[in-house]
Image (cartoon, rainbow, N blue to C red; front, side):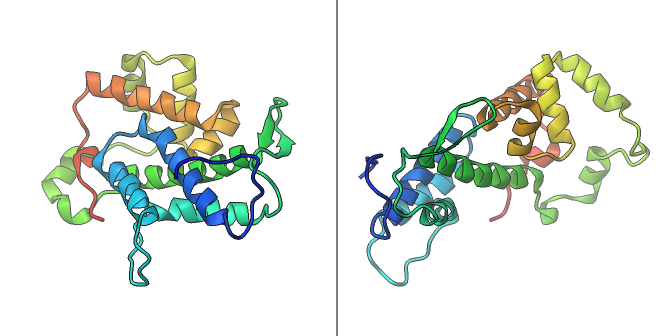
Length: 213
Protein backbone atom coordinates (compact mmCIF):
# COMPACT_ATOMS: atom_id res chain seq x y z
CA UNK A 1 0.00 0.00 0.00
CA UNK A 2 2.78 2.42 0.95
CA UNK A 3 4.89 2.00 -2.18
CA UNK A 4 5.12 4.82 -4.71
CA UNK A 5 6.27 4.12 -8.24
CA UNK A 6 8.12 7.26 -9.31
CA UNK A 7 8.10 6.21 -12.96
CA UNK A 8 4.33 5.85 -13.12
CA UNK A 9 2.45 8.60 -14.90
CA UNK A 10 0.09 10.72 -12.79
CA UNK A 11 -3.49 10.15 -13.92
CA UNK A 12 -6.99 10.70 -12.60
CA UNK A 13 -7.02 7.05 -11.51
CA UNK A 14 -3.93 7.17 -9.28
CA UNK A 15 -3.74 10.85 -8.23
CA UNK A 16 -5.72 10.20 -5.05
CA UNK A 17 -3.42 7.34 -4.02
CA UNK A 18 -0.29 9.37 -4.81
CA UNK A 19 -1.62 12.37 -2.87
CA UNK A 20 -2.35 10.28 0.19
CA UNK A 21 1.14 8.76 0.12
CA UNK A 22 2.71 12.20 -0.26
CA UNK A 23 0.80 13.39 2.81
CA UNK A 24 2.04 10.42 4.84
CA UNK A 25 5.65 11.09 3.78
CA UNK A 26 5.39 14.78 4.66
CA UNK A 27 3.85 14.09 8.08
CA UNK A 28 6.50 11.50 8.90
CA UNK A 29 9.13 14.13 8.16
CA UNK A 30 7.66 16.32 10.91
CA UNK A 31 7.01 13.58 13.45
CA UNK A 32 10.62 13.31 14.64
CA UNK A 33 10.56 17.03 15.50
CA UNK A 34 6.93 17.36 16.59
CA UNK A 35 6.01 15.02 19.39
CA UNK A 36 2.60 15.40 20.94
CA UNK A 37 -0.87 13.91 21.11
CA UNK A 38 -2.39 16.52 18.78
CA UNK A 39 -0.05 15.77 15.88
CA UNK A 40 -0.23 12.03 16.52
CA UNK A 41 -4.01 12.33 16.34
CA UNK A 42 -3.73 14.01 12.94
CA UNK A 43 -1.45 11.27 11.62
CA UNK A 44 -3.62 8.44 12.93
CA UNK A 45 -6.68 10.19 11.54
CA UNK A 46 -5.06 10.36 8.10
CA UNK A 47 -4.22 6.65 8.20
CA UNK A 48 -7.76 5.80 9.31
CA UNK A 49 -9.19 7.89 6.45
CA UNK A 50 -7.00 6.12 3.90
CA UNK A 51 -7.99 2.69 5.27
CA UNK A 52 -11.64 3.69 5.61
CA UNK A 53 -14.39 1.40 4.39
CA UNK A 54 -16.20 2.60 1.30
CA UNK A 55 -19.06 4.27 3.14
CA UNK A 56 -20.69 7.53 1.97
CA UNK A 57 -21.20 8.78 5.54
CA UNK A 58 -17.56 8.50 6.56
CA UNK A 59 -16.35 11.61 8.41
CA UNK A 60 -12.84 12.60 7.40
CA UNK A 61 -10.36 13.80 10.01
CA UNK A 62 -8.40 17.04 9.91
CA UNK A 63 -5.33 15.05 8.91
CA UNK A 64 -6.86 14.31 5.53
CA UNK A 65 -6.62 18.02 4.70
CA UNK A 66 -2.93 17.43 4.00
CA UNK A 67 -3.78 14.63 1.58
CA UNK A 68 -6.23 16.90 -0.21
CA UNK A 69 -3.50 19.53 -0.53
CA UNK A 70 -1.21 16.97 -2.16
CA UNK A 71 -3.96 15.68 -4.44
CA UNK A 72 -4.82 19.21 -5.59
CA UNK A 73 -1.14 19.85 -6.35
CA UNK A 74 -0.73 16.62 -8.33
CA UNK A 75 -3.92 17.31 -10.32
CA UNK A 76 -2.01 20.17 -11.94
CA UNK A 77 0.61 17.73 -13.21
CA UNK A 78 -1.43 15.11 -15.05
CA UNK A 79 0.70 13.28 -17.62
CA UNK A 80 3.91 13.76 -15.66
CA UNK A 81 5.75 11.37 -13.37
CA UNK A 82 6.75 12.00 -9.78
CA UNK A 83 10.43 11.95 -10.69
CA UNK A 84 10.03 14.38 -13.60
CA UNK A 85 12.04 17.58 -13.26
CA UNK A 86 10.07 20.81 -12.89
CA UNK A 87 12.87 23.34 -12.38
CA UNK A 88 16.07 24.03 -10.49
CA UNK A 89 16.33 26.18 -7.38
CA UNK A 90 18.80 28.98 -6.70
CA UNK A 91 21.42 26.46 -5.61
CA UNK A 92 21.05 24.46 -8.80
CA UNK A 93 19.26 21.58 -7.10
CA UNK A 94 16.73 19.80 -9.28
CA UNK A 95 13.12 20.12 -8.09
CA UNK A 96 11.01 17.14 -9.11
CA UNK A 97 7.24 16.82 -8.97
CA UNK A 98 7.58 14.69 -5.83
CA UNK A 99 9.90 17.16 -4.07
CA UNK A 100 7.72 20.14 -4.96
CA UNK A 101 4.61 18.30 -3.76
CA UNK A 102 6.25 17.43 -0.44
CA UNK A 103 7.32 21.06 -0.02
CA UNK A 104 3.79 22.24 -0.65
CA UNK A 105 2.31 19.86 1.91
CA UNK A 106 5.09 20.69 4.40
CA UNK A 107 4.22 24.38 4.18
CA UNK A 108 0.60 23.60 5.05
CA UNK A 109 1.68 21.40 7.97
CA UNK A 110 4.09 24.08 9.19
CA UNK A 111 1.35 26.70 9.06
CA UNK A 112 -1.01 24.40 10.96
CA UNK A 113 1.57 23.73 13.68
CA UNK A 114 2.38 27.44 14.01
CA UNK A 115 -1.27 28.34 14.48
CA UNK A 116 -1.71 25.42 16.86
CA UNK A 117 1.21 26.47 19.07
CA UNK A 118 0.08 30.09 19.16
CA UNK A 119 -3.53 29.25 20.05
CA UNK A 120 -4.97 28.88 23.51
CA UNK A 121 -8.52 28.24 24.63
CA UNK A 122 -9.63 31.47 26.28
CA UNK A 123 -12.14 29.58 28.45
CA UNK A 124 -9.24 27.77 30.14
CA UNK A 125 -7.32 30.91 31.06
CA UNK A 126 -8.37 32.66 34.24
CA UNK A 127 -7.81 36.34 35.03
CA UNK A 128 -5.09 35.71 37.69
CA UNK A 129 -3.10 33.58 35.25
CA UNK A 130 -3.29 36.32 32.65
CA UNK A 131 -1.89 38.79 35.16
CA UNK A 132 1.07 36.50 35.76
CA UNK A 133 1.66 35.57 32.14
CA UNK A 134 1.77 39.13 30.79
CA UNK A 135 3.53 42.21 32.07
CA UNK A 136 1.13 44.99 31.16
CA UNK A 137 3.56 47.69 32.34
CA UNK A 138 6.08 46.78 29.65
CA UNK A 139 5.81 48.84 26.47
CA UNK A 140 5.85 47.32 22.99
CA UNK A 141 9.28 48.82 22.33
CA UNK A 142 10.89 47.39 25.46
CA UNK A 143 12.77 44.23 24.52
CA UNK A 144 15.11 44.22 27.54
CA UNK A 145 13.64 41.03 28.96
CA UNK A 146 13.67 39.28 25.59
CA UNK A 147 17.30 40.22 24.95
CA UNK A 148 18.26 39.01 28.42
CA UNK A 149 16.58 35.64 27.88
CA UNK A 150 18.29 35.18 24.52
CA UNK A 151 21.68 35.89 26.11
CA UNK A 152 21.00 33.37 28.88
CA UNK A 153 20.11 30.67 26.35
CA UNK A 154 23.50 31.04 24.63
CA UNK A 155 22.15 30.43 21.14
CA UNK A 156 24.30 29.97 18.07
CA UNK A 157 24.15 32.52 15.26
CA UNK A 158 21.96 30.23 13.17
CA UNK A 159 19.58 29.59 16.07
CA UNK A 160 19.40 33.30 16.87
CA UNK A 161 18.65 34.21 13.24
CA UNK A 162 15.90 31.56 13.04
CA UNK A 163 14.40 32.76 16.33
CA UNK A 164 14.36 36.39 15.19
CA UNK A 165 12.55 35.43 11.99
CA UNK A 166 9.94 33.50 13.93
CA UNK A 167 9.53 36.34 16.45
CA UNK A 168 8.85 38.66 13.52
CA UNK A 169 5.89 36.49 12.53
CA UNK A 170 7.50 34.62 9.63
CA UNK A 171 6.34 31.11 8.84
CA UNK A 172 8.90 28.32 8.62
CA UNK A 173 9.06 28.47 4.79
CA UNK A 174 9.39 32.29 4.88
CA UNK A 175 12.18 32.07 7.44
CA UNK A 176 13.88 29.38 5.36
CA UNK A 177 13.86 31.61 2.28
CA UNK A 178 15.14 34.57 4.28
CA UNK A 179 18.02 32.55 5.78
CA UNK A 180 18.72 30.43 2.67
CA UNK A 181 18.00 27.25 4.62
CA UNK A 182 15.65 24.34 4.22
CA UNK A 183 12.27 24.47 5.96
CA UNK A 184 13.16 21.38 7.98
CA UNK A 185 16.44 23.00 9.06
CA UNK A 186 14.59 26.02 10.45
CA UNK A 187 12.08 23.74 12.16
CA UNK A 188 14.96 21.76 13.71
CA UNK A 189 16.66 24.95 14.95
CA UNK A 190 13.46 26.17 16.63
CA UNK A 191 12.88 22.75 18.18
CA UNK A 192 16.38 22.83 19.69
CA UNK A 193 15.75 26.35 21.01
CA UNK A 194 12.61 25.10 22.76
CA UNK A 195 14.60 22.30 24.42
CA UNK A 196 17.26 24.77 25.58
CA UNK A 197 14.59 27.14 26.87
CA UNK A 198 12.76 24.42 28.81
CA UNK A 199 16.04 23.27 30.37
CA UNK A 200 16.55 26.78 31.77
CA UNK A 201 13.04 28.10 32.40
CA UNK A 202 9.75 26.53 33.42
CA UNK A 203 7.06 25.70 30.85
CA UNK A 204 5.09 28.86 29.87
CA UNK A 205 1.37 28.86 30.72
CA UNK A 206 0.22 29.14 27.11
CA UNK A 207 2.22 26.05 26.08
CA UNK A 208 0.85 23.88 28.90
CA UNK A 209 -2.76 24.43 27.92
CA UNK A 210 -4.34 21.72 25.83
CA UNK A 211 -6.09 23.12 22.80
CA UNK A 212 -9.74 22.28 22.40
CA UNK A 213 -10.46 20.80 19.02
